[in-house]
Length: 407
Ligand SMILES: [Fe+2]
Ligand SMILES: [Fe+2]
Image 1 (cartoon, rainbow, N blue to C red):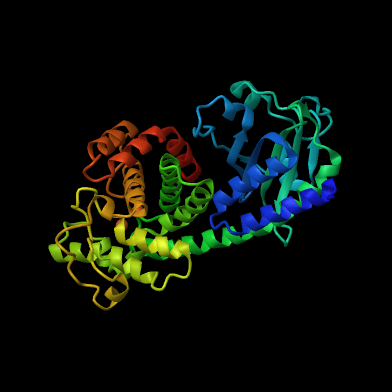
Image 2: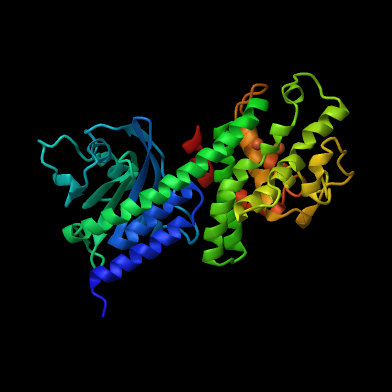
């Protein structure tokens, strides 16, 4: 029979395998937190990402608070950043690279440099007691972030301190997770560099814009897939894939002349046709897709300007891979319509327009949120899939919260 250690080691190894298949760095962080909570039976937790000399809260989870919500509703919380220094628990861990295992955060001796911010408990009406905080370090010992586990529970659900004997195991998990995290960071960096190339052509396509479009697309996909009763495994797989692939929606702009993209005056019909070409030129970049991320990125590139009513572009243009030889071709008269457009294209079209309207651009101020919502409702069944508009409206709080991570 397996002893406890073997059981946990096996569990950690299978979890690491699962993390290794994750593409997106944000999804990866959320999964690291979920899995670390499972290993330690922690009621709550947070994961922070290091951004220069600050820590940014990326995800927070709280089982007790989650149970108070209707099924499929995600917990809404405020994201925030704070400096890496010894005054906070997570800051201390990032600064010193030491693990802190605290039995009760309300009883931290006053002579220690860090203290617990009780305000967080007061606003959320929750009592934080035990806390295990670990640094996430890459193989060169650089801090990638901090993992914080809150309120370990025993079999009866009573809050207890985190057992010392678990600490080496959780820190082994954090070590392996950090390697997977480093790889996901690299994927994100490569994607952002590709976008930087497009941004040199079209300054509207910034890293922040595409990150938000990726985030909204992933939220919309998850809610849509739950409604369609897709399996947990499928949802987990594709919410990660669309998070990365949606970021690449406008990457085809690298192949469009910047004199057209940056032109302030009204475009001629021919110039507009060239702009429209960024859809299938983007699809050409993913010729012979090597992975499912690339396959879906190709579809998204091609379809993100299609409209539910068929008045979008480029329409059914046949084999996108062959179009690179004739970049000036005129789009067909009719766009794809309704479910002819894949769910990936329908989702990203809505996410992209929502972000464009709510953001400041060189030619316009951001629209007020209410006006944007009104516009999206007006476009239900015209520009956008009506079912997706309903899903969007049901999840608007979550979408607005995720926006704050990329301002
Ligand atoms: Fe576009
Ligand atoms: Fe965009």
